[in-house]
Length: 141
Image 1 (tube, helix red, strand yellow):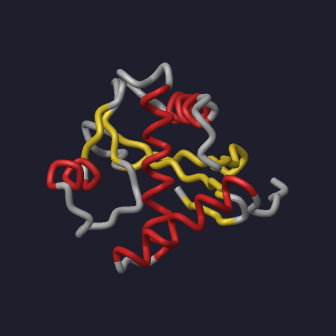
Image 2 (cartoon, helix red, strand yellow):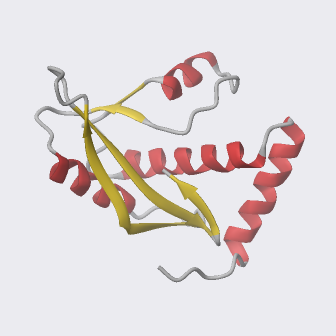
C-alpha cells in the first residue's frame, strides 16, 4: 500500500492529537492508538453489524470509570455464535469499509490477519491484526 504524505486532514488531526497528548501529559503514541480504536468502534457502530457485538474488557471498564488510567491497545468484543475465522474476517472488512465522515484514517486490508485463540475453550475466540494509517503514521490494530 503506497502511503501519501500527511497533508490536509490527516496532518491537522496529527497536530491536534499531539497537542492533546502534551496537554494531558500522555505519550503521543497512546493518544494516537486511542484515536484509532475510537474511530474503529465508530465504524462498527455505523456498520450493518452494529447490533451483533458487545464491547467488553478494558475499553468497557475505561468507559464505565471515565478514566484514562489503564491504556489499552486492543478491542474485546463478544459476538454471535458460531463465528469462524472467515466470518470474523468478512465482518472486519465490512466494518473497515463502512462509510463515515472523513477522519483521516485508511486501512490496509491486505494486512488483515485473523487467528484462533482459546481453541480448547468452550467459547473459542479470534484475534485480528491489521494496520491503519493516519497520513504516514501507522496504527497497529
